[in-house]
Length: 295
Image (cartoon, rainbow, N blue to C red; front, side, top):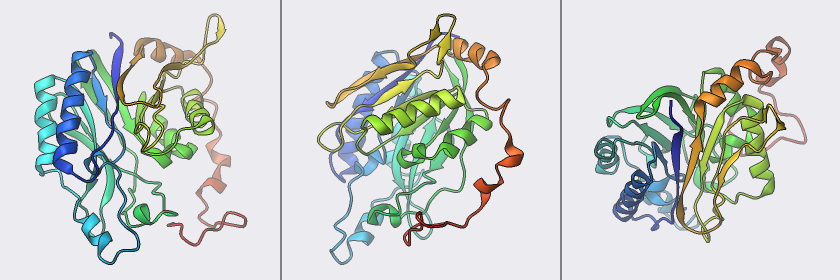
């Protein structure tokens, strides 16, 4: 297997204008294909540029919810057609129509135009009005993705999901070799370090795309998951963007990662799941009680 290339599409959205965002995203995907990308990853909720509604205006939340699209919409089908044309996987993000209230999702569209999975953000930011209005996802998914470089097992998590170690852990246990992470928030040293830890502790590759400044602060990043080699500790970071708009290519040696996973001690072999029962308890105790948290 040759190296897998993931294009981080750190591009500015055009507000809630789905048609203009669609066109700009398609243009960015074309540029990614020209760079030789196997996968193009958009930032979080690209269809409406993660644009919040006016929380204080009557009827605003309904108008915002009406911006949601389903998988039969032209917004989604245009990218499915594009994936076939470019022979490239596209991780497409959008506000998805859903019974009750919409979802924040990423659809993994393979190079044949098929949707392998649609993952809805599990850890919605319920402390913020916009995400409190969303339907959270109820599971994590891993699919075997056919790329021009060979098969790779891919999972996804979205923004706040990466701040919970359980998200990446479950994906690792389900077989993920790489996790795609659409994002929309400030990526500062602590969040970036936290994300690095997810790669280290699960021995898997990570790719995250964020919005550029001024909406967010860019810093889209990728880690290859290989923390040590014959020379000792090594740098896992394969790419980090600055604050400006651009397309940044993250390259992963998956054969090296697979060999590393066969011999190193992290991941699953030495876990003690029988003593992790407190992780399954739903009760929240002080000082962590939050009245707006969905359980």
